Amino acid sequence: MIRRDGFTLLEIMIAIMIFSIVTLAMVSILLLSSEIFRRGEYGRSAHDEAVAVLAAIEDDLSRVVPARDGGFIACDVSTAAGDTVLALLVDRRDRTLVGTRGVIADTRGPPYPDLDQGREIVVWLANDPSGAAPADRHQLLRATCTAPVETDPADDEFYQRAVELVTWMQTPSGTPPPGAPAAPAVVVSGCLHFGASLSNEADRRDLTDSGQSVRTWARTDLLPTVGVAYSTDVPVSDPFPCGISIAVTLTGGGRHAPRGTLVPLSGASISATDNRLRVAGIKGVSAVPGSWLRIDDEWVCYASISGDGIVDCTPDPSLPTIGRGARRSVGMTHNRGTDVLFGQTYTLVRPLPY
Image 1 (tube, one colour):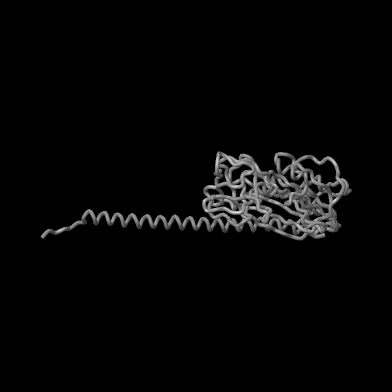
Image 2 (cartoon, rainbow, N blue to C red):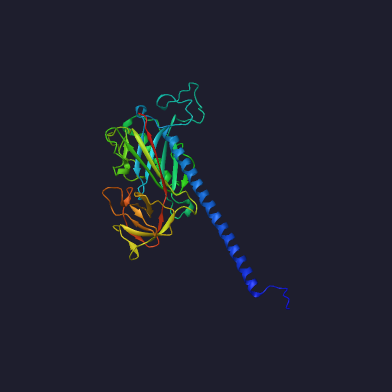
């Protein structure tokens, strides 16, 4: 009778195989759990970020000066991607010394505590610094400056000061207007779109997002090119708007923000009229008709997106927004390998005091 005190080769191989399978399973579970956790954290932080941005905008809208008290609102398409610059005349947060039309109500005389005027001009705009790191691109900026004392509405001092502030925000190396901070505040990075729409009683569709000409209300037409120095007055022609809608598209930031790579269906690029394209490397994006994606400075509103990344943006009469060159952008040629960006759009709608 032969006695065996060790393992056979087959038993050793089976043991190694079991150990390998268990190890691979444990590593896979660990990686999957980490990925789920990171995506969950991305979703949570993206939601918190959106709430913070909308709350900051809401705070400014809650302090808008009414039209009956000399209010001022201006908006303009400021970038090739169709972003809007928005300027508002608002009351300062410290209203204890503010009387009618922003005049200091304190009779004790100067110095007044941190209050040159009772009001300030606030500007919101989107900015994409050239050469910036990916984490610092597509910034949403906010800045304020002291509102001038308007001695004659025809001189349009509010408008002139707003243009000064916008020009400085786009080129911070210049001289800031009175009361401006040392640098514009970066509210958030990863803002793919900031658009303001204004409506009035005469035509509630009179919106900047609908392709209307650049407008201000109760003052002048804003210059088509932001940053051009103010030169002449334009007669007042428009009533003060009764409502405002602000749309903000955010990526949520981080490496988990949805993005892909452009892959033309034929050739090395897509033309400005191609209505079908492929996006590689995407997952978890919206397939609802009317959703958006951004390629360079062009917005595309698509009707459908398939599992293999085929995007169909053929114009549809039942959905007038579908197509290339959406959101006031322009259809253009894009090369293979161009980044395709996706974001979540949030809209804030508020009435304006009259």
